[in-house]
Length: 143
Image (cartoon, rainbow, N blue to C red; front, top):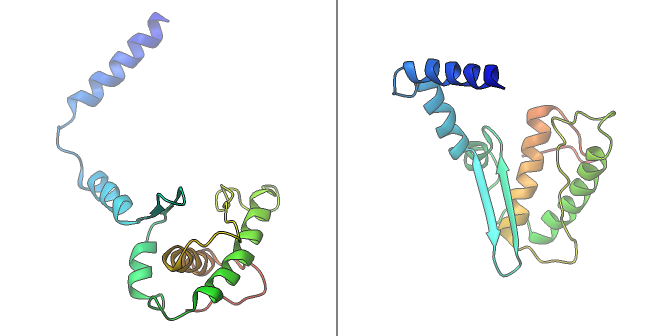
């Protein structure tokens, strides 16, 4: 135990000997993470979606079709299909990369999440498929 504490102390001492200014690389990584986080929440429905994906926020602003391009019904239909396929892949970590498909998505088809949620979720699936060369079903991902 004493050795562990000594090693921990030495580790802290070596860290404290470095300059107090964070490196540009670390600062850049923290800023990128904050910029690449999309949060969608609705307190009345008690849900929250956090999308933390490098490049997604800028892709959404620059490449995705603008809000209003698709109808909410279209987005809901595609999201139901994509979520079903996504969740099946999460449950099969030996067949699909568990680093890509980490968590299940609790998307209930009978709940009206509104346009914004469906729009961003749909565009995340498109971004994901194009970025990681995945295909979530019979639909060709299009922009």
